Image (tube, rainbow, N blue to C red; front, side, top):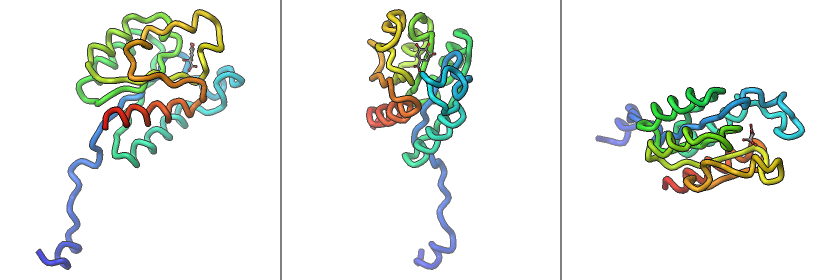
Length: 161
Ligand code: DQA
């Protein structure tokens, strides 16, 4: 094929994205922006998701975002997403401190995940110091507000290679 013919017919890109990551937000995170802004900041969940999608796009990674308030809803969503994603970024919110079911669902996928929190949970009440995900996560990022998610996604993508 000559050079001019090639430029006349640009190749189709079959798959723009080489990887897929799920971002999972737990209960009450739909209220970000107005929920205790002195702790959680003023950035809304749609703004966080848009940033993560943009960050993913420049790395060729499709980002799927979900938020649910119910533990069972989150478990079912993780089960369904497992086969189609390469890994998870998850802020389980209050379920961090209570949910064996979410831990088991993530482990059942066999996919790596990063645990993120907007706040530094160790600077808060003692009941927030325990995480059911901490020992099985690739890593944990907390205390940087919405930036925790960006850092978590960056760390996961580095791990995925
Ligand atoms: C949180 C911390 C949790 O303890 C709390 O229940 C949340 C948010 C955070 O992002 O800082 O809902 O996960």
